[in-house]
Image 1 (tube, helix red, strand yellow):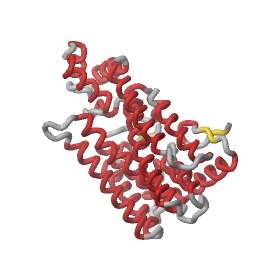
Image 2 (cartoon, rainbow, N blue to C red):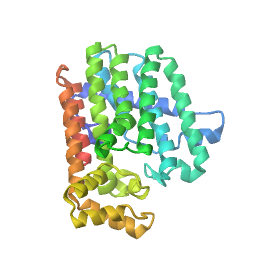
Image 3 (cartoon, rainbow, N blue to C red):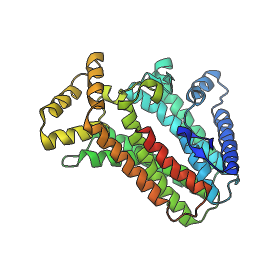
Image 4 (cartoon, one colour):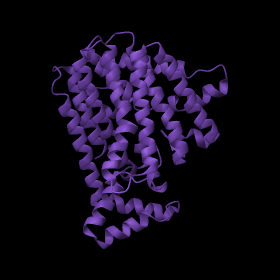
Length: 336
């Protein structure tokens, strides 16, 4: 058994493992090339998160989806570079919005250079992704544009919050479909599309990616509460401190409204207080980690991962399908 990609994904087929490793290495070279500028400072800022590492989850999905067509087709590696550049750009912007101090175990770009540089560096990465995309053809441009619109819409909806009468959990899951599911779905779509796979296969893999992307983000929500900074690569409870209600908090509020238990109401009141205070923040994390709402969020993660697995049923059996199915398990494992 060998290990490749994020979360210790096991690949039991040596040919697949070799091809995926080679593909990811080519993506890494492509990322470094795409983030070079004639201005040394821009290169330094643009490569800040590239060199910090990361799971390369989206490029891995491009490589695995490409196995259902010609895995050596010329558009596969560039499309993987595009989705990762887009993802990296959103991280620069997210860290500004969240005022995050750490990303991938290193100081965030906004901490190191300020918000203006971080935002503009994200824009630079979007521009470089667009240049690469233009060479992949108009259909690839269209697919990416639709996904990017969904991504931005999801971020706006998260910022605006649910409309009156809308269930907050349903609203949040729609937000995640846009913010995270859209780009993960495109990763699978690009891999299949660039490999020349049948359109039915492209659609199946896109649906799989959408569900897996939501499961992936839900696992992140759980990790933000349950993990330490060594595991997650960023400061635990960042969303709590910024007053962003992720799924564990939403499940807590839902339970408090339904049952009216004093301890649930008290925890909600704590979360509504000023969590920039370190002691309050630590207390909120401690109590959430022991609360049934965190387990409910884990069950929600499992549900989306199982839906992703079920979506793969029409695909032919083989090493690539097995690896995609194992990614569902790996995402759930992250959430405990």
